[in-house]
Each structure stands twice: as C-alpha cells, then as structure tokens.
Amino acid sequence: MVVQGDFFKNLLSILDEMGMSEEDVQKVNVSLTDMKNFDAMNVVYEQQFSAPYPTRTTVGVTGLCGDALIEIELIAKK
Image (cartoon, rainbow, N blue to C red; front, side, top):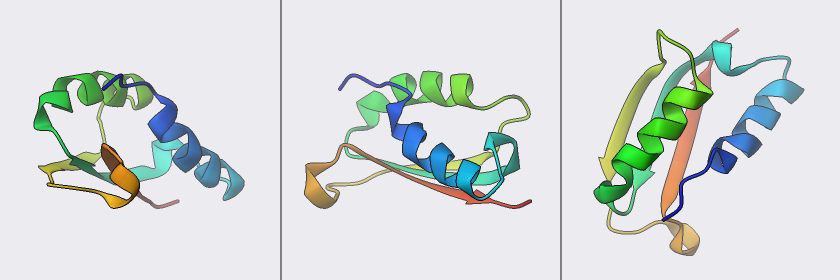
C-alpha cells in the first residue's frame, strides 16, 4: 500500500466548505485492513496535522466497503 496524503484530501475539502480547517479537527478514527500500514499512515497523519495532534483511534479490521484499505472519519468542532 502506498500511503499518500490523498486520503485526507476529500475530508479536508469538506471542512473547507464548512469554513473549517484541520485545526478544528478534534478526533480522528482510522480503520486499516492491514496494521502493517500503520507506520506509513502515521507519517502522513503527522504531516497533515500539527502538534498537539487530534485524538486518534486506529483499529485493524478484516475488510472495508469496496475493498478499501483505509477508512478515515474526522470529528471537527468550530
């Protein structure tokens, strides 16, 4: 799996449309179909957000819709 910042692109564009940014993100939920990809995902996560990073939960799952390898949910508050 090649991990790129693209998996945050759509989420952050939705925040932008709502007048929000990554600074408004309070919590991130990440589901990975292979926990071997955690380190690569974490690098992108640290590039996307600034310290102090939003609270995050990362879980390993056996499958995701459409054979996706990663699923991300953001909770943001203005």
